[in-house]
Amino acid sequence: MAPGTQVVGERGTLEILSQLQGFEIPANAWERQVLARRIADYDPKVLDQLCLTGAVGWGRLSPHPATLEDSAAGKRRVIPTSVAPITFFVREESDWMTPHHPGTEQPEARGLSHGARQVMEFLRHRGASFFADIVRGTGKLKAEIETALWELVAAGLVTADGFDNLRSLIDPKRRAGQGSGRSARPRHSSGRWSLLFTDQAVERSKAVEATCWILLKRYGVVFRDVLVRETNLPKWRELQIAFRRLEDRGEVRGGRFVSRFLGEQFALSVAVESLRATRKMPLTGEIITLSAADPLNLVGILVPGERVPAISGNTIMFRDGVAVPSENFVSSKTGAAATGG
Image 1 (cartoon, rainbow, N blue to C red):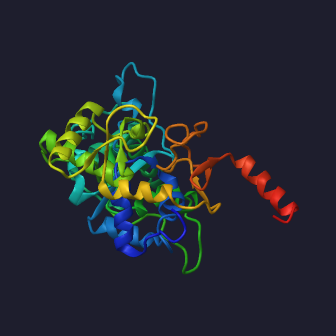
Image 2: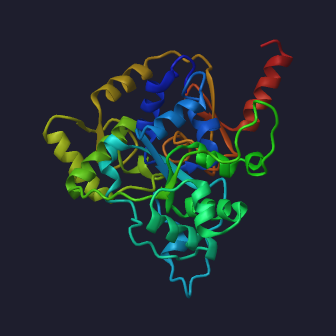
Image 3: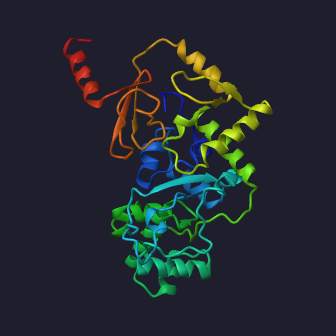
């Protein structure tokens, strides 16, 4: 996210998605607040292409609390919302998904409305279907199908061929059919909707090891405190055993790379060298602003300061890597301008 470090094009977009896969972020924050800040001249069409060609998939992998309750006694309901947590996954690297995904081969209709249950049953029996087919097959209104699909996305039960399918649900103008002229976009995307689940059987130890590599690619240095905001992980003990196995094979390094934290730490060699180099860099006053929903929001976890709720409407500022309260940053800039600084 630092100036001059952004990636470009389809290859760069796939690299970023590979680094962030498995980390759930509000649906409406992914493109504008996360991807666009890491990818120079971000083009949504590139993400659509990666999804439509099958290189990348998306969906909510953590179970919604309402789906875990008894449908007869449970009071929670799945509410369609644009801030539903979703993540991406690179299909060639999706072994890590197997032990964490709740599975929807035979999903129970807990916390779902009647319309959402009907759409889920339709997709279960008919398989991947276009929006128009779902409307015709269920005999419901388009608006009812939109709400049902949005609800199933929030519950972590469905996905689609393209990411534009999700945009069409969370964009109020698209849903209202607004827009005119050649720039007007269709109300619904052409991609198909389908149930979200992984049907491959991957050995547990292999899946946990794949998770370790995902975390190393994301953080460089991994220890228990780093993973506080992660939602789709095995137990730390399982990860620890897998990390030790990688260390024994000489593929990662074990040691104490970050001070003031207890427990074992594991790192990529390049990350250790990067830490050492960063410590010697002169301070420049560089400011980086990011969304509190971003994976880099580790304030109050790793970085000193009070925790900032991980919602897309909140922002965090870093000056030379140190978290700066927003009000302090504004007042300091005003003071500097007043004194000619």
